View (cartoon, helix red, strand yellow):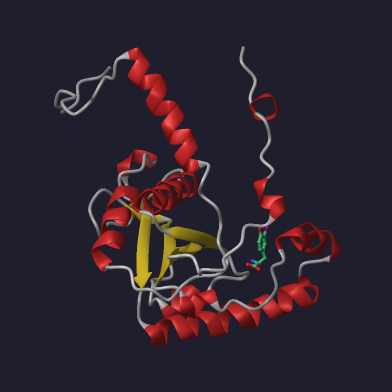
Length: 224
Ligand code: IYR
């Protein structure tokens, strides 16, 4: 490796082999319980929990450590209402033709439609933005690298952190999503990446059977 400023790895924790096995099993059992939920309770969730989960997302590996993301955590009822109105407006176009027959057929087993009441019911909406330009320090305008990959990983961390905290989420990608930039007052060189809905599930929340069918290890993995 080339000369660079570095400090010793001081926070790595090694587990005994047996504990490692137990931990890998325990994590799988726990993450298996993560489901995308489309019916939320309006029970409040303290902001500190959302802050901790976003801090966890901010530790994700990313291109050149430029951390090319911005999270807008929306709690305001007024802003949530605007998001719902805009999202439903665009989804109406999507479901009434723009999606095409094949896509609509693929969505049938999930039961989704253009109605998105959870955008108002859930206590938190987290709009995730990717930054084409940036740098290690906030406000810089250098080129960012692997932006999609980086923001995708951070979003995965965020979903996992929220699940770990005991909340449920829905990944929502209204098409087009540019209205989020306006509502969240984000600059032109940022793109909306995804909208996460987070909160408690409604008492009668369900999980589509279709979503419970997971591919086997053999189907998703090859060992060489
Ligand atoms: N964004 C739309 C449609 C949608 C698309 C896919 I691919 C999904 O997995 C689920 C929904 C909506 O939110 O209804």
